[in-house]
Image (cartoon, rainbow, N blue to C red; front, side, top):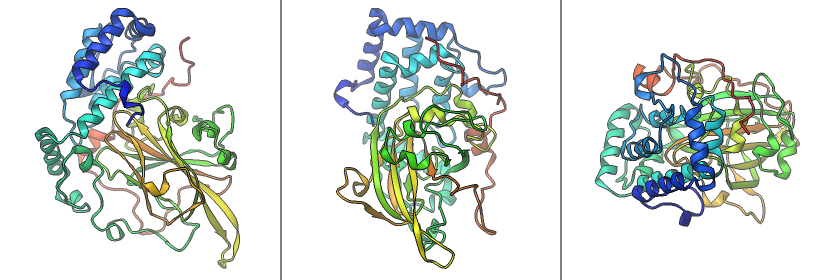
Length: 407
């Protein structure tokens, strides 16, 4: 949830009045930047599915207001939860002017304001909220819902962060006594990102980049991950939305309040492409989104179990689009007077409704690849409607996101 609620609108009508006034007065260049964004819209690919198309080319302020109105009243489904995010993303798709509009000044303030409104809506106890919860339960089906505690959820966000009924049974922790074994922090799609993290200027590595110092907002421990590895763990909207410790040890540093942008992926559809969500994506942009971090110090033992040192593992929850607030449990909310013990698989925090991911960070030469033992889960044979709704897109093409933004 955005910080500083007092500056945000509390009703949709108030929000629409605000952006209409900003446009009429060209508040901080709002009109200038919006007009430049729609004037320079890049057409979406011809085979884009009809349900996620939206033509922003030369659209006026009333089109923008109508779009937000429809989005606000729309109820996301299990397999359609990203549709309006994708429709909105065509405004800045491969469009430098659109990127500037959504990530700077009043355009950024607009997205923060609308995100706040959606958060209020998802926290309301209304008949509409109950209808949406019942719809999701039905669409998820008994097979997927059997893993969760069934409660009298009052709001959609309460349902969205639903808890597992028997975590030890439905999400058993691998090798709980072996600190060298890293476990997935969440129900997620996993991809290797980079294997040469840098501390200053982003340097292309295998077509992707990441600035570790910026990602961790200048934290002292950032230097430990220079030359190391990052792994993305992307949570889909219909997944379990708590994140857990990937290793056991002590939390020596944490932040839950690093500000950043709400929207502005140059090619959001590409993140969902290929079934292997996020494969080959440019993750450098995620050090500009709202995020937090937890740094865990864990013991390093040899094959005989003797203590030979220590190593550090980072967990960076990133809130992407819509709500996606980064929430830590009180135990892991800084400041700390001393390191906080954490067990492997222990619950750390959650994301409210929206897109989100965790980025795991490892020291140099400590996590060379994703490795599995025979018999462990590597994936799920999906129903076609879930694949079509959350993963595949036929219009994948190489992004131009590494171009500089327009001045």
